[in-house]
Image 1 (cartoon, rainbow, N blue to C red):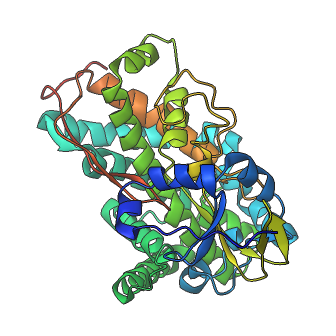
Image 2: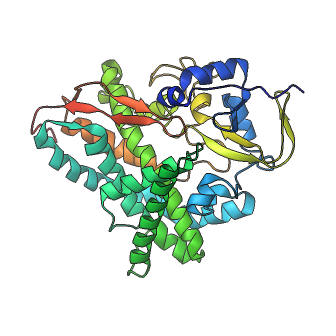
Image 3: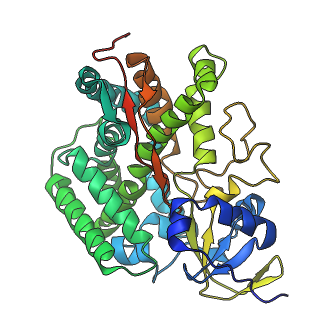
Length: 392
């Protein structure tokens, strides 16, 4: 065994662009302790793919973890039968059949309304004015919190993900997270006793029908909001940005040489909206001759694995034609994202095709700023088009 490698980062630079540091770690220290994050980072794709399944070592049960402390112990922070039991309970809300037969039409209807309001303007910030409300309206329907405004949904999601990544212990970030969870609880309480029909497949109703305890229902809805708003929002805007910067690839999609799903999934590999998932070491373990001790905090760096030079032909390029079958954008083990089918439908069958059909001359009007490493996406994205453009 070797002494645990230490890799120091500049937290601000890492937030702005983590990829140079991650590439260096993959090459020189694929299992390294980062003092600024107080965690061991695992950065190679095949290591992540293999070790995520080893739940007896890399446990999702993290009683002292930020997510558990701030949001309650949701199903993402459980292993084995406890995790699978709750996953089974929510399946009727997120299954491929439910997405196809129930949610997709609602996603398209909401996206059409947003585009109707947007088209006459001729310019917008695509993150704030399109990607955010499209994602939020979908999440309102799926969670059952239909009384929440889109702006509220986005704000509470951001508040929680900031809180869950608050490894520096900033009290203001923690306070915003606590405000966010309180607001979600208020909306859950408001909807708790509302009448539901046989066609109500919301997370609130299917968990109630499965008989889950109230605290678990609330925790799992917070989990869905913490990832279910920012990931589609960032992937919608980010994929549009990537396609506009690669017009030849956009044309390939438009004429059928590639699909909108290929574009989304390549973007999710290249600029992983969810770049990390934490684990707790449950028993002594050695990886690449590095000894890990019980209670060590480990970060599985999906955003790094998705750019592994040993796996992908053009890891640092956006290329919708390259083989990305090894991508781990939605995870790799028993915690594979339960909302994957919802994201694929919302982004590849509603948001992207409807946007480019309605606004065919859409173009970038300035630089898009990106940020984040645990969660990464465009912060703003100015675009323009011909006012009132309509090709439907």
